[in-house]
Image (cartoon, rainbow, N blue to C red; front, side):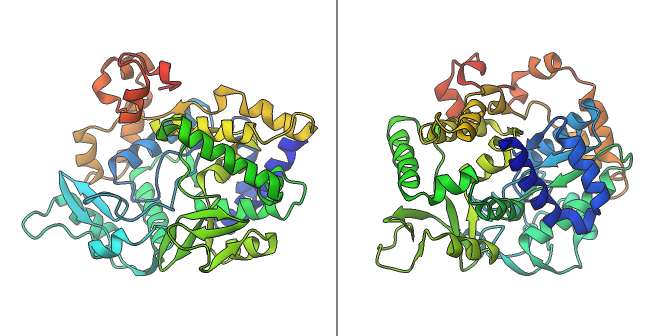
Length: 412
């Protein structure tokens, strides 16, 4: 019963985001197939597929769909990230042949102060390299993607990536459906309009909501930071083109670093719903994963860090749900199933020759098909034989035996 309700909310949100573009007939077929083996590839961020890690995750999603006999690959990338997360890093940058390329031609100050989901237009793919270095790949991308103006960063990335896939994939064996944070907003709205939803209970029963955050604070003090990734309480606030952290104080959401007497958001259901509809709030990772995976029985396949911070998510909700309630008891069974939460992607990477074809104007047609064909024929044993190709984060290294990823609960 509970899973059926969670899936109904999921389907309604998907239809709201993709129904017009894909057509309801195609979408219904895609959803019917999805529920036979529900896997959401949650590793990528919303940025150009010409970025190495993002490309790898996308290629892996299509390989997985092919091996499963499915026609659709489902992605759940994050768009609440900052445009510049480090020096010449983040969605606002693209590295080609070691050269940092400014994707939209925006100042570093603007990039550092903007989030993908909140950066409005007009924007154009300028793909500007430094004056003294101009890799040919940047020229190709500019020819493919330039000359069009977009209303926002997220729209620009999604439309550009569809263009790249249309160029790179000619076989049409698989299609992809991308569910980003705007989908997550619609999904959370569906749940919050349902007064019986467990998500509504957890967030708007004042005592339970406070207990959830008390548990999270305790886990943050007891466990390594990588295991409890909870930078903002429940939602991100959008202000001046950027997502901002919130803290729950006396049943109000206060911007992190601001005095509690300043403007704040009351934890009042109609207020939260309206701010979600206006995209003034976006749900955090805990809420997104709880609504999209735990309440639907879907599996999440992400980067190496996901297998770590899912630990904090499952422990937090486990301590505030009641085994005496039949619905909540069903959720607890899902939370205690480790096979749902420990998947990690990232073993097979495109090589230099692949990239030359992908970014060469004369060779790009069908280039991703060739990468998929080559990597899809590689066994897990062969892919994992060369451990230099498997990239671990420092968090993994500190939490696991140097020769065993499995000791950290990581499936590669």
